[in-house]
Length: 386
Ligand SMILES: [Zn+2]
Image 1 (tube, rainbow, N blue to C red):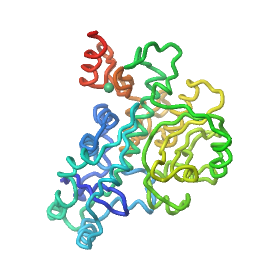
Image 2 (image 1 turned 30 degrees about the vertical axis):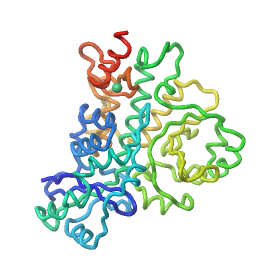
Image 3 (image 1 turned 30 degrees about the horizontal axis):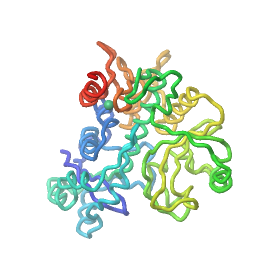
Image 4 (image 1 turned 90 degrees about the vertical axis):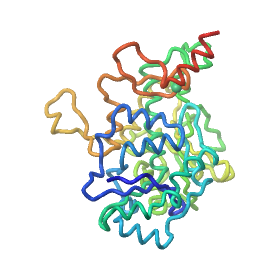
């Protein structure tokens, strides 16, 4: 018995509440089908994201920290509700927490959010009544919306880079020709030179800006922690999932975990740039540092870093003993989604010629070049009929 998704605010962040009976499995890796992965990485608004979350089940990272507090007893949640520890969703806060990383990143506005919140906001969804159907020792899962945003975005960005590397589209919307075109740019990254000023200011806190002379960047996910400084303990409390994928080492705090020596992949947040910019217009970006390397080798390294940082694959010895084609463990939904993206049999990643976003498409039949019917129609109307 699973409850409908309810959104609320707690610790100044938007969270998702779902009740489960204690007999029900919490981890559902089998929910990570090709279709459900596609729906997650192609979701472009709160409604499609919530539908996708509903379909996939609970997001329980393997490396939950003591601060995560993702699983509470129904009894405990009843008490928190009675004590008004959960609040109504704050539209501005939610809008800040949502960024659909895409070739053209999208942040929903208040109006778009209010439509969906009419069904799912805490007071309207009446979560207390829902809980009357559950026993005291049943379970409520609390997930931060930004964790889902980060999961969606990490998969979507990696898919876009993989698609542009291994199976590049002939011509993207608006392109005149694609000879020698740079797949990272086509995947939505932009290039920037590290200025002397950046080296001397941001470089003091983060050696990324001293190590590399240029970087690629793309809007990624908003981490709405407003800290005085990058203090590990506070960061871990505010964003346990994000905290579990970054290195947290001095001078490399926001570099992605488990990278090779070069540590090219970095999350750039307000903490690094606050001396230079107002908090209001801060950037939250995923960056790849480089000097003279060509985009292909960087793309390869980026994909490997993302897999190691987010999934940290472990060989499943039960099915792979002595096999030339090992399979990787699927014990969490997160691992299962990554496995689906990387090793789906009979599918390839394609890049949509209209929107530039990537999706898994079956190998049989005529290869698809669009992510959806909408994108196919758009391309036909605007480019082919003329
Ligand atoms: Zn498309």
